[in-house]
Image (cartoon, rainbow, N blue to C red; front, side, top):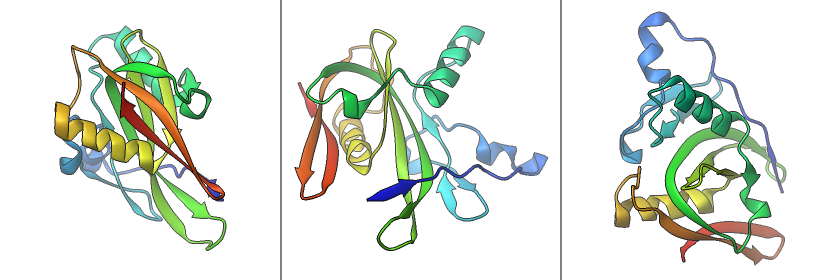
Length: 160
């Protein structure tokens, strides 16, 4: 079992503000964000937030998404955008810190879904390889899957 504890970035000098901005590039090109305890990739987002209302929607998705993916197993969502940030967690068994992705998915109806999951992150990465990096004008229908392996649960996205 893993205990999740998100770390907050330390304040950065004015000249370093570019490093902490949300990136809108491909995942391989993400800038690095130093948290003091670890070096984490900076947040990445495909949702374009130009207007005040769009920025509010993005902030709500980042801080309080509509649903947890764990509550949506076997549900199909029409994916159009994604937000990815990294968190440090302490592994219960080893006590070591590890980096894990926290993902927020945006559907075509404006709902948002979240999971802290390497499986969801890996599924998204594969979707990016096949369909290109979002925003997708034509939504990609994906089914939320959960695989049980002993005591561990893994989440993934399947094409619906």
